[in-house]
Length: 181
Image 1 (cartoon, helix red, strand yellow):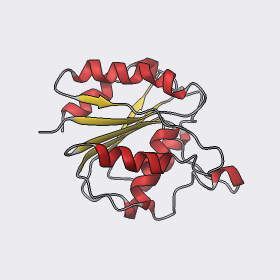
Image 2: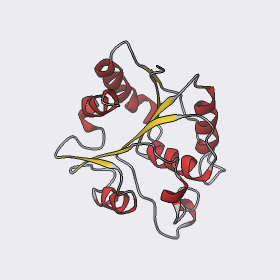
Image 3: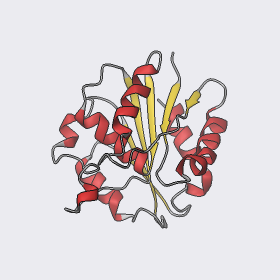
């Protein structure tokens, strides 16, 4: 069985560095039978989606065998965008979305980030989806989780009382769900 987790980082100038702690926690909690692949996402400021969906597609295609997908913050939202707007040939075992912003509004800068209204219908079928959000997230308001739970009623939702945007750099809860596959 293939146990490759593709983890997509959050945004910001220090997003890759900040999320290294999340990835280390996840890899540690999963153990040697899993490999967490953590590519550095490069932002192209001239593109409305920063070019991330294209990079995500290439990273998914490069995984040998089945893939487990995880994303944090902007990375989680753009992972969801990629999955809902592209045909996926690779078998996806599950999707884990952590501190995921639900982009809405008409500002130009949000247009490339916003999901299509029918995005739930376009996601890969019969793939478990897990949503994680801390109530005290200082970056992504907790109400974002509520928008996702309304549109993805099949998702397993983990409301976490404390941990902020980075879940105290502890993804033990995510690892436990991955191991339960």
